[in-house]
Length: 134
Image (cartoon, rainbow, N blue to C red; front, side, top):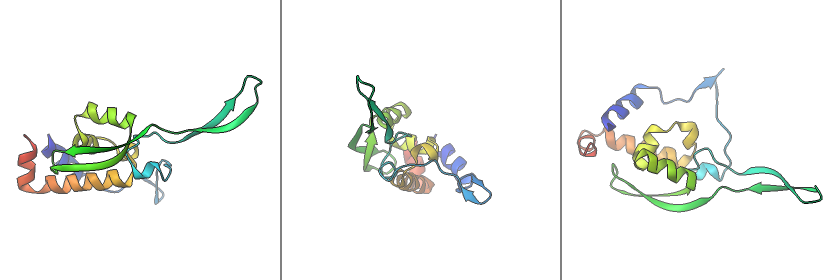
């Protein structure tokens, strides 16, 4: 499985889709770019009282500090993770599969991209790719 994913990712270009030379990115707050939020971010709106008076408020995502075991790297990775991202990681089968299979605009974080590159570099080594196929 990992061998196919590594070959597919190495064959594709590392650049993001562009429009007239400008990198296209979905906006993410500074907070979301430092963890695995899987598309969730701070939302804004109005709190409406019984008298219909509207005051601005914000909804913050449910973020937890977690250590996730990487089978490929053989170590713990620390992330700020939303509970939605934890569900997605469980559904994929682990942090390695989640980072390799999820699109970059959903991961959309510096720490997630760094971990993905570390996993890809480890899988590119001939010894590690055989061991990761378990």
